[in-house]
Length: 616
Image (cartoon, rainbow, N blue to C red; front, side, top):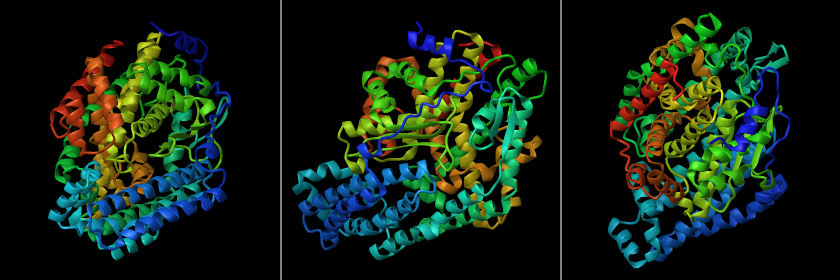
C-alpha cells in the first residue's frame, strides 16, 4: 500500500524539469557543533594531535613487550581519530568553497601525519615472528589487533625503511598530488558556457543532470557537445596531467617493490591482480548487456519521438511525459519509506542524517560558485558522520546520489555506534561502494513499486538499470580503460592525447553502441575525473556493483534471512579480509564466477521486462 507521504509527493511535487526549480531550502552542516568553529580554532586544536604524535613517537625505540606493542597500537589509533576529525573539517570547508585556505591546509596535514607515523610499520615488522607470538600470548589486549598485525606483515615485502617512507610521505604532494590540482585548474579555465532554454540559461557543468534530461533534444545535444568540446579545447594539457599521474603512481609502486601501480592497488584491496585483470576482460566480453539496454532506449525513443537515439538522448524523457522533480524538503520522507525494509536501526540512522535539526547534512539546491558540485561523506571513530552534496536540482539522479553518499555516512555511524576500532573503521573501498550502490538499487525499485502512473513506473525501472543496475559494467569500462592507459604508458604506446583517444575508443566500443558514431566520445578519458583525483579507484565500482546486485537478489528473495546478516556486516567493520567477511556474514564467495553469472541473469531478466513493456 502506498504511504500517505509518498502519495502526497507524487500528487503535488511531480513537475517538468524545464518548468520548475526546487525552493531554496538547504540542509546546512553544523561544523561548530561537530567539528570546529573556525579555521583558527581547528589550527589551535592541532595541539592535541601534536601531543598524540609525540606520545606515539616514544615507541620509535625498541618494542620489547606485548604491553609496549599494545600501547603503540592504541597510540596510533588515537592519532588516527584526531587526524580524521581535522581532515573531515578541512574537507568540508574546502568543498563549501574551493578557494578557502582549508583546501591547501588539508593536503599538507595528511602528508605531515603520514610522515610522522611512518616509523610504526617498519618497527612492528622488525619484531621476529616468534617474539610477536609471545607478545600476543602474554598480552590479551592484543587479540583485538590480530588482523591488523597480520595485515601489516602481509605487506612486509613492500614496506620501506622509516627514513625513506617519511621522505616520500613529505614529498607526496609534489610527487603525486599536483596532477589533480592541475586538472582542476585546467577545467576552471575552460568556458563550458550555458545552454539557453525556455526558462533561462542552464550551466553546462553545474546543471548537467537537468540538461541531460531536458525535454528539448536541441538543448540536450548542445549541452553534450559544449561539454566535450570544452574538454577537447585543452586536451594537450589534460593528457599531460593524466600521463604524469600514471608515471607518478607507477614510480611510487616500484619504490615499494611492486611491478606497477595497478598491481599495488589491487593487492592493497586484497584482490589478486591477475584475477582482477581477468574479471575486467570477462566483463568487457559481456558488454552486450549494456548495449542491450541502449537498444531498448533507442526503440523507445524511436517510438515516442520518431527519431534516432543519440548518446545525448539516453536520459531524455518520453515525449509528453513529465519527469519528477523532488524539492529537498520532501526527500527525507522518500528515503524514510524506501529504507523501511532495512529495519528500524538503519532507517533511524539514515533519517537522523537528513533531519535539519541535527545539522549533519550540507546540501544546497542550485549549488553556488566555487562550491564542489559532487557528493561525499565524512565520519570516523570518535566523529559524527556528515553528508555533503554540492548541488541539488531535484532530479532522480540527485536522489540517487543522496541514497549513495548517505549510505556511506550511515554505514560509518553504525560502525561508530557498534564500537568498531579505528584500525577497522576503514577497509577495501569496493565493500564500501557495494553497500552504497545497494541503497540506490533499493531506492529505484521502491519508487517503481509505488508509482501510480505506468509511465512513471517504467521511468524508475529504467533508472534502476541505467544509474546503478549496470554500474558494475560502467565501472569495469572505466577500470579497464584506466588499466590499459597504465599499460600503454608503461610500454611507451601512449604518449599524448591521440593515443588516449585511440585506447578510449577501443575500450568503449565493447560497452556501448555510440562511440563509433560519436567523435566527441573519443576524448571521454578527459572526463573521467577519478583517474586524476583518485588513481585506479574505478575498479571499486566494478566489484562493488557486482556485489550490490548480489545483495539485491538475496534481499528480494528472502528479506528476513538476508537483512540481519547484512546489518551485522555493516556494523562489524573490517577486521578480516573482504572475502572472509562476505563468506562469514552473507555466504557470498567473492571469487566465485557465479556472482557475475547470477548478476547477468538478473540484469537480462529485467531487460527482458523492459523489452516486453512489462513493469515488473
